[in-house]
Structure formats: C-alpha cells, structure tokens
Length: 256
Ligand SMILES: Nc1ncnc2c1ncn2[C@@H]1O[C@H](COP(=O)(O)OP(=O)(O)O)[C@@H](O)[C@H]1O
Ligand SMILES: [Mg+2]
Image (cartoon, helix red, strand yellow):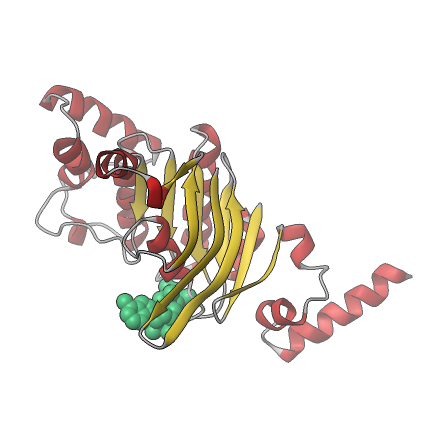
C-alpha cells in the first residue's frame, strides 16, 4: 500500500498539488482521473521520486520516502515499474532488448536468465511474433504491450502507468486496461494509473481518485461514480449536456 499524506507541490508561484491525502491499495488498479492540467502526472512523478514534494509524506508499505537512505531509495526504485505516456521505447532496440533492458541495468542476472524472463513476460502480455522486431515495425497496441512487459520484467511491487491507453483506438484501449488490471491482481501489485478516459473508469475503476485543479475533489469506486451528487465529478464524467439528461432520466427511473 502507498500512503500519501497532505502532499503539496509548487512550481514557482503555481501550486499544483494542494494537500493530497489518499491511499493506493495493493492488488488493485488505483486510478487518478481528472482534466488535463489537474496534476495527475505531477502526482505520479512525485510517487516516482522524480519530483520532491514541498510538504507532506509518501510511504511505500510503511517506508517513508523522505526518511529513507540513498541506498534504500535505490532499492525502492528497482521495485517500481513505470509505463510512460507514449510508451517511451528505445527505437534502435528490438522488442526483446527493450524488455530485457531493466534486467541488464539493475540486476546481476546472466544473459540466459534474462532471456528466460524476457520470454516469460513476452508470453504473459501476449506479444506474438515480435521478439526481433523494432518498435516502429509493430502497432501502437503492441508497443503498449512492450512497455507493460518492460515495466513488469523485474517483478515490481509497484506499477505506475501515465495515460497508458492514450493514442489507442477504443477497443485496443480496453484490452490494454484489462491487461494492466489482470497483471495487477495476478502478481498482487500496487498499481496507479493516470487517465482522463471514462472507458478506463468503467472497465477498471476499483479505486478512483479525482483531481480538480490540484485538489482531491472526490474518491470512490466505479459503481459510486455514477451515483454521486458531487458537482465537480458529475461535471467531469458527464461533460456533454446529453449525458447529463440521460443521467437525470435514469435517476428518476431508479426512484420509481
Ligand atoms: N516541471 C514542471 N514545471 C512547471 N510546471 C509544471 C511542471 N510539470 C507540470 N507543471 C504544471 O502543473 C500543472 C499540472 O500538470 P500535470 O500534472 O502534467 O497535469 P495532468 O497530468 O493532469 O494533465 C500544469 O499546469 C503544468 O503546467
Ligand atoms: Mg499528464
């Protein structure tokens, strides 16, 4: 479990995170949702230690980040898998070299052990006939699978994904969302996914936090999100007037 307590982060005069307190649960796909510019990526990068927070604490299964030694921080870093926005694959490397890269960099595994583990995760994310291909030779959905395989190759305890299905068609996006959720449950990972996509919320929203202008404006589950009267979230979820009308009609029907 990751615990975030009263976290604030500013850039110059601009306060981007305004006192965030929440928990991200183990074995669950925790979603951070909100409009573009609401602070999702800054929060994820704060978890990752790329940003140092100004106020508040972040703890990883009881380990308070700001109180950890440099060595312990390095160890923690090896326990985190990250899927960056836009996949961020190495263009000049093959699929299997991309996926094996963290093992080569951060472990003492032999080339043979690396190959075995790479083959295993390639199978797990169902990448077919792709071992020797370059990222430019496979589809966007396949590239995401490579990014996910690379993120889980070192058996992470924590998995962070920034807008993992941006740029994908809606069907492929759902497949990728579900893959992340399956892997999270299968390996009991504490997963945090940033998204502004309502399809993701409906598919995998087990625990959702909603950011509005750097404030945690609501939290709950996908079931609760369609019942809440919280104005900010209703406005985000039902961004079109037509949806708002459908929702009102549904609520009336529920009461009959
Ligand atoms: N490194 C940075 N320096 C200055 N401002 C930043 C930096 N990163 C993000 N911001 C600002 O923080 C706000 C939130 O950004 P971000 O977390 O990327 O939003 P989201 O991911 O929800 O779209 C934006 O106004 C953005 O301009
Ligand atoms: Mg972002």
